[in-house]
Length: 194
Image (cartoon, rainbow, N blue to C red):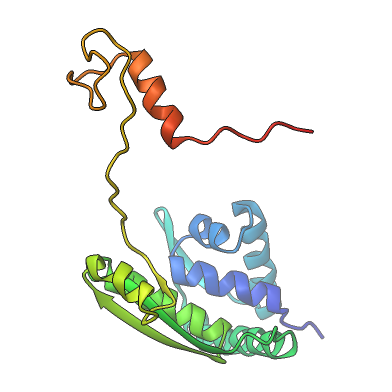
């Protein structure tokens, strides 16, 4: 008697989520042909098709609709068991600051995935204007924040004739010599091999 393998179920779930064999294969880091072969194998074991093909995508067949919740539960339970066995001891509280202007749906997916992977970590997420984050980090109110840091450029003396050694170039289009000089301030040279 044939059995359903978790690898086949993972491929099936990925393709069902994406609605495309190619996109589903990409999601699980497989080639499109390998994913197609796994779906054919799954359909061979079941004796029925799990997807109806149309145009450039796929939709669940009646059998696929019945199989999907079972496949999702099985793969989720296997993942949970592996996490529990391999628990790296990551636990505690993590306070994160995220800009309010990022896509909330994508953010919810990321936080949800993190929470599933590290169930012992209590997440405290602050969505606010990112200008408040540096101060919150400094005061210890946040452990991690994503924000755009704007720093004032440090100018060195420009050696081009038009600038007359000024610390701030007087021209809009800076000469290559001036750019090289400014770049040397911001870019640290790589350590030479010993």
